[in-house]
Image (tube, rainbow, N blue to C red; front, side):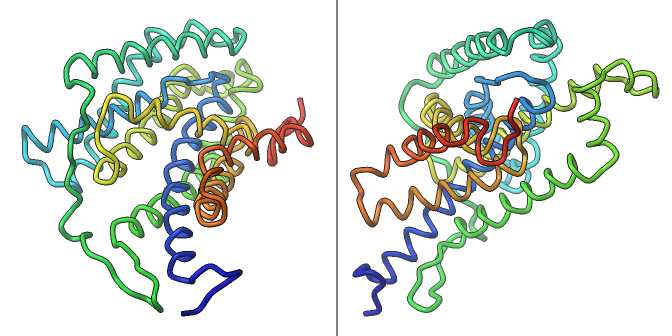
Length: 295
């Protein structure tokens, strides 16, 4: 059996795939956080709850209406985005321009309310969610086992992340979004409705969280705590990449997922803390993050 550094290649390749799979969720969720913070200057601690909401909406619509997975992949994130619009208009709009701590505390409270309601309505036990039949099964390539659904998640997450980066960094709409955070009166002078732009930005970030929730539902059990179990790691990913850096969120998400997967092979006991150890090292040498700009 082929080995690398004493590790059998099937084991190593399997952990690399698992690391990229986890990294896909880290990248998607940290991307939504980076979009919201970078353009609205709000630390959205409710992001994990929105991720959980996307999974639960998909679960309920699948149970009640029998919608297929492909429809849920569109409908559930859109409904999470609609909820985010209401949340932004009723709550978040009042903390724009204030210290980011106010937004953090507000969204943390919203997250507790959403998770508490989910726990009250559905209990603490996880709900099973079947993966689409078309993506079930595995393939063997050179001794490497490739579960079809996990490969699908990695590819879709990568396409979504790169598309979002291109939208914000390479389009006219993205230029307006970035300009609105720096000089709102000037952008309004060009006839741009900035409040609508900011609402759409928050809704889009929430939609990404809901999208990740639907894709995660067939692999992770749908539960009230699935978001809170993940959001701390995602915040660490955002800090490592650089707060507000879109490209940094994508790159650090996949890279840290890969580091986590390889750590499980080399030193499994450290797999749960490797992300935070990397964060400590990065902040020591580069407080603004790998891709962030110094204040």
